[in-house]
Every structure is written in structure tokens, then in C-alpha cells.
Length: 250
Image (cartoon, rainbow, N blue to C red; front, side, top):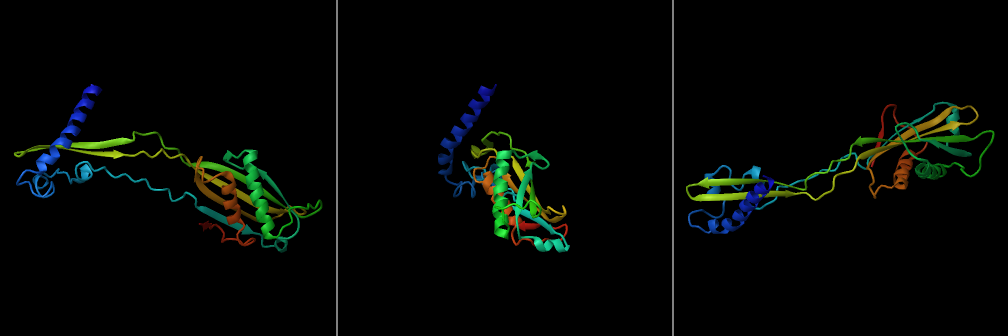
């Protein structure tokens, strides 16, 4: 049965290719299908359901998810006198996996390195540790699936139509060819950082930054994601954002 259907479909396509030139040349049909045969048949070749004139592909567009590559940030700072020590003295960095999908140790190293660079840029000394004082930057890196990966699909689809009138018959075929690969999962990566006073244990500053990227995207390796998040998080350090509001970053 499938073989028979394929043969019929191929025959229809071949008939369209052979018949179209000769039918267009016949007197009285007007300049092309739009001014002649199509005007007598509501399902003519310019019918939107057919996707346009004979042989024209049905357009297919895939819009990019607006969340891809977008960074969002929220930051908070203590109101006590201890906040005066932010951006000064020695600081060390610690990290764990955080909640959600855990980020393995080798990948966390990229985030630790990015935070160290950001802390140095903010005025901290990351080379010398103070046993009795100083501050510590605690990191949490987590991931979650925002949109699952797309399933494999048939790259070729289309529609066919047959028209019959007192002038004869005609065939139409419109194909949509989409050779794009299915999209991988859209993954959200979140970097939480808080700076704690070692002596009192009080949180002096904290914030988080998130970004959405496609899983396995060569344009977004871990070191680039880490750098983007750390840069956004420490932009203008130690400023804070209004409570409950994030600051979108381009």
C-alpha cells in the first residue's frame, strides 16, 4: 500500500511538471494562473493553503528563544557598618554544587576562576589568606532544564491539490524542506555568590546571576558562561538592586 501511494504521488508531481507549461500557453487562460484558471477556482495555485504558486516551497521559520544568552542578576548588600569592608583585604573562594542538577568539580573550576578574577577587579586580595579574619566568597552553581530537547522530525512535508474544470485538469504540489537539526535542550545556569565575614559569620553581600543556553552549544562553553555570569554579578560591586527585582543584562 505504501509503495502504491508513493507511485501515485510521484505521478502527480510529474504531471504537474509536464502539464504546467502547455496549459499556460493556451489562449484565453490569461497571463499565468492568477489571471486565468486561478480566478475560476477558489483553490488556485495562489491559495494560501498551497503556500504560493506551483512548485514554491511552503515557508518555514524557527524563531530563536528570547531567553537564549540573556543574563539576569539580583544583588543585595548588608546595611550594617561591616559593609565598609567590602572590596578590601583578603578573600578566599569556596564552592559547592548548589540545588538542581549538580555541576561537576572540573566544571566548577571555571566558575571559581571567573569569580576570583571578578574579586580581584573589585579590589580584593586573593593571593594572601588571613587566618583570623578576612572574608570568604561562597559559590553555588546549579542548572535546570528550561525547555526539553526537540524530537527528531521528518525534514520533508508538503501538500498536493488537483483542480478540474471545463477546460481540463491541473495539479499542484508544494513542498516544505526543513534540513535544520532538532534543537537541544535549553538549560538555565545559575551562579549564586555570597561574601561572608569570617570573624562574625555575617553575610555582607550576596547575589545571583542566571543565563539560558543550548546544551552542547559550541558558542557557550563553561568558561564563557562563567565569565559572563561573574562579570554581570560584580558589575559596579558592591552595589545592590531593589529588593525583589532583578537587573537584566545584555
